[in-house]
Length: 161
Image (tube, rainbow, N blue to C red):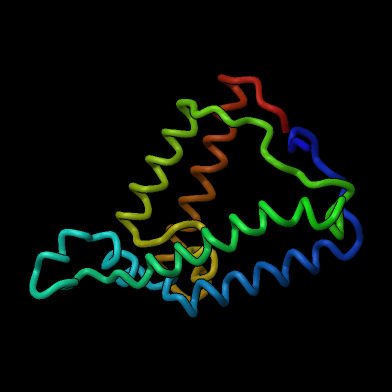
């Protein structure tokens, strides 16, 4: 149950992945996660003290994230117990590493800084990239950064893939 080697992709998995991506994108749009002003309004918790509570702070995305975390926890807990293997793969591909290391912490910090500065994280940016010049610029910079990071990591640390 590791992801160290690439699993073969059965016929139909690309269509299912595309459909799941569209559903995810629609959820992001409906939840307001593709609106940088709404995201920045959520991240600015100091705005809670500006006026009557919640002030100018927008707590609605906390409910979106809470619901997403609950669904994910349930899926990770129940799915492997309910069926022996996924529908379109020979096995479940779960992370093989559990330690917290420097690349993880640096990546998390960069993610948080980028989200706080731009109001986008990867999913909403991709969902918005065709509709917004700002999202397209963010997505392009994100993809370039991912490629540079992968190249840098391959040169400095032996990684699979």
